[in-house]
Length: 420
Image (cartoon, rainbow, N blue to C red; front, side, top):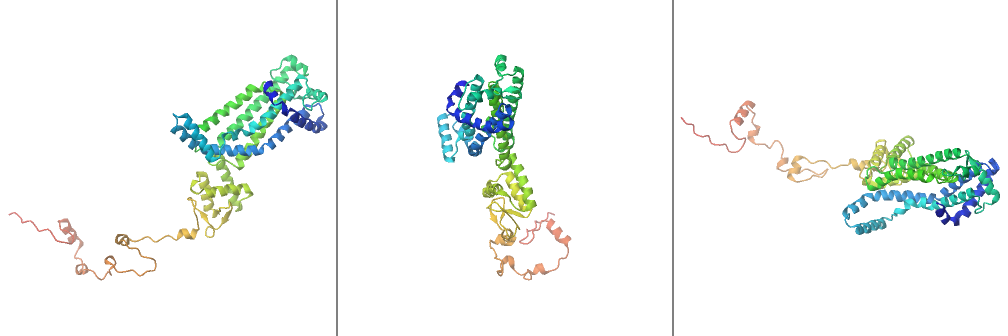
């Protein structure tokens, strides 16, 4: 770890300068040699770094969703060229190029903050060894060595010996208890963050190897934090625990307000949006308008949650508009059907009249309002055969004749001569 941290020694001076500036502020409030002053300085460093990384976090979200969308196509490529790995990789790169997707974009925030993490580790390790580094001079070094967080020195580790801990004016038991609790909290926050992503913000309709990889990371990352955490100084544990809590809160906000289409989070979001729209009759905020606009533009490609949302608005007498707003009155506004076509309600009710059986058989269609022409099927009822005008003598006689084998209308069969 020391070798890796030394590779990022070029950034230790900026990191140490930021910590010292925050320490001046918190030292005036809590005391220069207190753990609160140094601990809050590290927390403030994390917050500053994460604010600067928000654009990369947005790119990470877009890249992750793009990868989820491409999973069915990637699976087809893997099955089609499963015996040709070179062709498989070529088709994958072609797919990435056509869609403008970069698989490494999802790792940008972690890669971007890695130099700051190792630089902070290098600074704290130098404080533990009694060496000045960056802008931390002798007086600041002595102040940092005296700082304790819940009884554990800022530069102490779980694996330190009793002599090393006593040199920092602390007990081995207090150091191990504090570091163990922080390692557990760090691993638990990482597990909860990954589990939240898997259970709420993943399209449940797509079953791909990508989801299996995410499930694997659900358990791999917490184990990695637990294994490597015993070698981290208390100050680095504060840094990493803070960044995990920030990531968890940031992800909760994104999942709640901008969920992945087809996920459980989208179902909950559209349910809340439907209740708000039916109560107030309007969409609030640009974010909600953007989501409704995207749903309207999908047309036939809407998922079940989006179709349920659109149909619910229609039943409530509202219609989602292409600009992301909603309008009242089904007859005056464009009502969006499940097929994604915008047609007025009056236009939908003007259906062509159904033809009669005689019209379908004759193959003629009659326009509305045209005079009907007399055909054989449209003759007046009084022009009937003479036999039809005669009154029937009885239904029983006609029924008995029909049962005796005589045909109705047309030539009759000659009776066979009876044998005497």
